[in-house]
Length: 250
Image 1 (cartoon, one colour):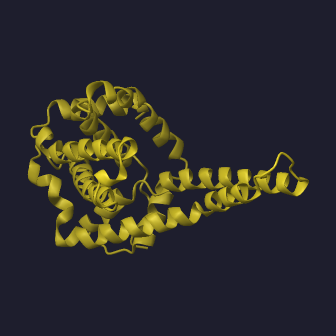
Image 2 (cartoon, rainbow, N blue to C red; image 1 turned 180 degrees about the horizontal axis):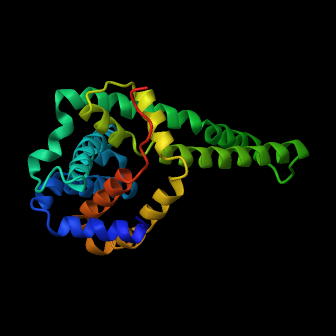
Image 3 (cartoon, rainbow, N blue to C red; image 1 turned 135 degrees about the vertical axis):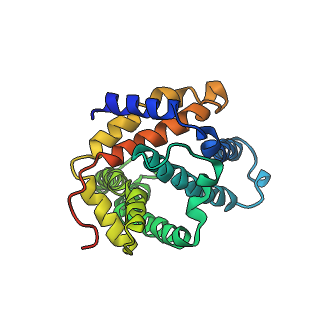
């Protein structure tokens, strides 16, 4: 299934799906709230937001609701569900899911951070060697050049690893459905295996939604009512068609 066919299939699935707006109601509201909070922090006094950790809490809660919606749409893609409801958006808050998902989020964040270390080292080299006067030595030039290269290498690595680990939540879902208990590192490893040779396809799929993202400010975010179900269903279809020949229990 190519990208055009995948997106067309997503539209067809959503067209006949009862309860889709109830399923995505909380993720849509939290996305709007999170976006509004980010704008508020960017353009207003920092004192407006009493706790700097608050946006991170909202993002974490949104992540749980988003994963719930994603795995529910995977069930729809696999014809395990013919209709959905608001209760499906809380699936990851169960005892079975909550701890495993928290650990997965933490381990993935740490792994991507490690791969991103060249970004910080590169920025440090550039900042420390920017001349305070109009003259610059050859050593400073080379250190700045090395810093820029390290920054670019770290940026590329972090993007690659972000896409490599992008299917982790779906992998976790399939493992739990199969009654298998795997560590977060093994889940990330399986996601990396699945995404081998597939990363650009996922990038192209997500980039194809850029036109919808450009409409966000013009619709005051209301486009999310259509965009989120469309995007999540497309991602579920993408995962579902990935070749899964290896036994994840190994």
